[in-house]
Amino acid sequence: MLHKTKGIVIGYIPYRETSIIVKLYTEKFGIQSYIENGVRTAKGKNKIALFQPMTLLDLVVYHNDKKDLHRISEIKCTTPLLTIPYDIRKSSVAIFLNEVLNKTLKEHIDNESLFFFLYQAILTLDALEKGIDTFHLTFLAKYSYHLGFAPQNSREIETQFNEFDIHIPVEEETKKYLNLLFKSDFSDQILVNKTFRNHLLDVMLAFYRIHQEEFGELKSLQVLRQLIN
Image 1 (cartoon, rainbow, N blue to C red):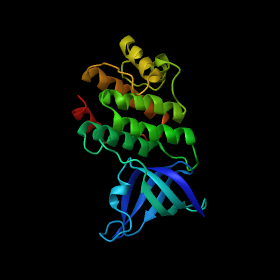
Image 2: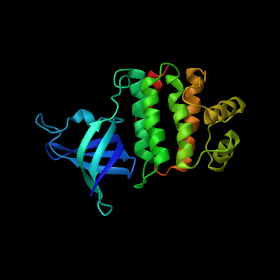
Image 3: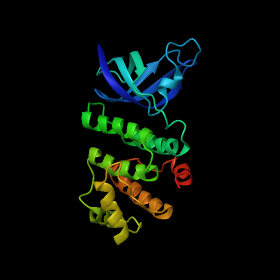
Image 4: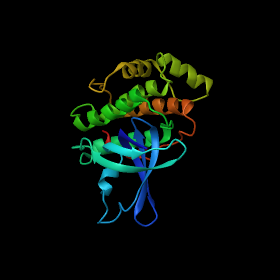
């Protein structure tokens, strides 16, 4: 049965000689996988550029709740990203966020609130002129609300660290900035130096590991730390 839906590309893997299996987070069906034939050839109906991570799509898809792999009938890019692919700082943030999404998006059901949060976050990052260096921190804070484990305040994070024997200091200045992050919007300017920003990121990632099974280490983290000054 055919359905219209918006989608966000999370990633893809090669399949056989010319095809791919692409993972999309869709407005109607949550996280889903689709096979796209012939995309890795010059004569393919659709180009591989459509399936780059974080691309925003309008789709017509075949969907069957009993299947794990579906097909795409029609596809087009909704809004081309104008800066993320070309700005090295933005692209490093996007790669980091994409890895976080790969580890946390699990549900095969619609979640309109979460979908449009992610959709708008990508558009906001693409348009952003200031605050790029703290965007990933604000994203993690806001995303935790949609995942259902956002703390009431920073003291709750400190308490959970003690309970799980996590030895990352959550001192008064850290608590102050954590509280700002969980109340902030992407447009808010949170001015911190690189060292303290990395500390806040360590705290946020440790907090995610408490609540997300198999979250583990992030391969993109080192590059992010190097490029976000």
